Length: 242
Image (cartoon, rainbow, N blue to C red; front, side, top):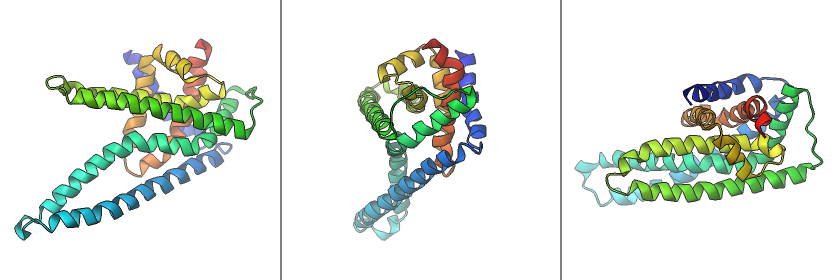
């Protein structure tokens, strides 16, 4: 398990090298632009919505307690960061899914020298990728609700932070390994089964992705790096097991 966790981290790191390949760069730029537009839009919308709310709350607070303004903003920012972490990646992936699938296909061809045998058009590829992302979004929501309820149980909730980290790592592995697996028309249940056989590998890869996703500005390039790393992981570790 420990060896597989370390191996999963190295596969994510290899994605940085792959996205610099001349044949891959065009597929990298589109997801990055999508990330910037979505993330920038969320920041602007959040500020525009919460700023009047904070000012309204502070209008009832005596002037000598003006420091509470920063406390309120800290709480709002923290809660927003948690919400964005668990929703931004799936939403961004839904929008960028067709381009990520094409990038994964191109990388696999680059690694193996073999063109994927698929008769699907770009439209069919796009529909399949978006449908898969929506299925995962439902999976995420169900497990998030279950973990949230668990977090409210006294005595047991001390383990909630650890479970959230494990869940987040597992989720991100499913998110990005869907692209190479989906290109081979593996359904979501089969993807979970294959990754379940190598849980350490999945958690190591997803954990590294989670860490980079939480770093401002660097998180803009996480999507293409993770897609590239997931494709290498699929080719070298999972494809033979399918």
